[in-house]
Length: 219
Image (cartoon, rainbow, N blue to C red; front, side, top):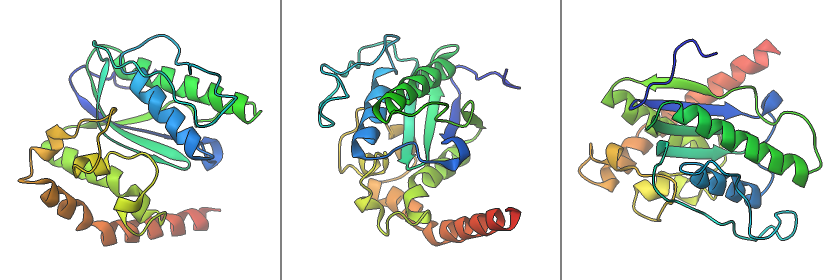
């Protein structure tokens, strides 16, 4: 059991990574599958399924049902090769836990069948941190969106090809999963938010370098 229950109406930074820090995404179709399941389970309890078997063509498109009665609201997200981040509001009691359990179990089953692997995909239960202030909300959204840059995956966030809500914040694409309006309302324009994010890029890179150094020393 969690030390503190997740409270309806509150926003949390939710994240998890692959077991032993191993990858959880092995190609673009896997990111696509996770994203589509993430959309589906916002409102649906039933198992996500493709119109045709996902074991066939990796380019097949799943059947997405947005519907009403969402259990969670996604404010920001980023999917990285071996972990993911969500900035997420709980809309009903047990909403985040039910959502993350269905998403993690469904995606892990897909990966295990597709790649003929066994065992856990994720490192236990997801982790969560309560967002208590608007300032914290802003900084966590920036932290989430900076992940691909500070990790050295890309040199320009606009070229990040994996799912992230960053481009939808900037108004450069539509996003079926996320609505960033709550964060963007604190800025005069999307350009101001972009500046807010990139102003901390160098600092974020230094922190990432320090983290890797500490990990190396621990081994």
